[in-house]
Length: 397
Image 1: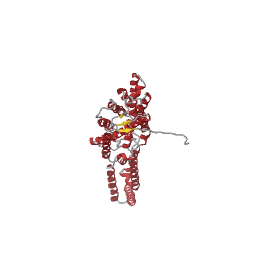
Image 2 (image 1 turned 135 degrees about the horizontal axis):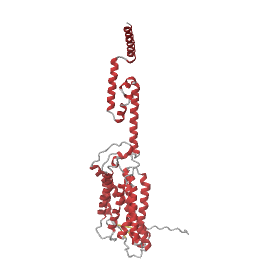
Image 3 (image 1 turned 135 degrees about the vertical axis):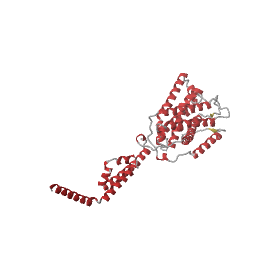
C-alpha cells in the first residue's frame, strides 16, 4: 500500500513538471520543430567554408544549445558572420596594399601560355622605349659637350658623326676624354636618380617596370659601356686609352663593372617583383616563369630588334660602333640573371590597379613601332647639331 502510494506521488510530480514544461517551452510538436530547425541549421553550416565548419562543432552551435538559447544563437551567428566577412574583406585590402602574402590566403589563378606571351610583349615594348630614352640622353650629352669645344656633330641612328674628322686640330687629349666620358657620366647620374628616387615613387606595375628598365639601361651605359670600350677601343674605351691605363687595370675594372651590375641586379629583385600584376605569379613555384617572361625574353627579343634597327647600311665613322653597342646590350644580362637567384626577395607594395584587366597594350605597341620607324628613317640622313652658348657680361658704357 505504501509502495503504491509512493508511485502515485512520483506520477503526480512527473505530471506537474510535464505540465510546467509545456507551459514554459511549448508542446512536444513545437519541441520537435526546434530540433528539425537545429538539424537544418547544422546542415547549412556544413555547406559554408572552413571557419563556419569549425563553429558547427562548437558546443554553442550544437542542437541542444540551439534549443535552449535560440535567440542568443542567432545573434551570435549574425555578428560572427558579419565579423568574418569584414575580416575577409580587410585581408583582401591588406593583400592589395601590403605584399605580406606569405601569411595570407591568396586566390589561385590559372596562368596559361597566352598570359605569359602578354607579359613578355608588354615588357619588351617598355624595354625598347626605355632604351631609346637612355640612348638619346647618352648621345645628346656627347653632342652638347662636343659643341662646347667648337666641334659640330651629326646624329645618326647608329652613331654620332664628327664632320671635322679624327685628325682635326680641334681635338685635344682633354676634350677627347671629356666628350667621350660625358655620355657614360650623364647615364650613371640619371640611372642613379631613376633607381633610387623615381622608382620608389612609382606604384602602377607598368610605370614601375618602365622606370626599372630605364634605370638598368642608364646604369648599364656606364658600366657596360666601359666593358664594351675596353674590348672595342670605342666610346668609353677612348677614356681609358687617353689616360694610358694599363691593360691589366682595364680588365680589372671591367670585371669590377660586371660585378657591380650583378650586385645591383640581385638587390633589385624586390622592385622587379613589384611589377607583377598578380601575387600568384611571383609565388615560389611560378617565379622562374615570371622572370623569363618579364625579364629574359624582353632582353633577348628587344636586343635583337634594337640591333636590327641600328644596323648601318654604310660604313660608320667609328668602325666598331655596332659591336660596341651590341656588347652594351649583351652586358645587360648581368642585371637580369642575378634577380633569379634572389629567392628571399619579397615585394612590399601592390597597387589596387594591378588587378585590372590584363592584355597586350596595343596602343603602346603601335607607338613603339612608329617610334622605331621614325628613329630609323628620320636619322638615316643625320641631324646636324652645333650648340653655341655665349655668355658675356660687361659694362654697358
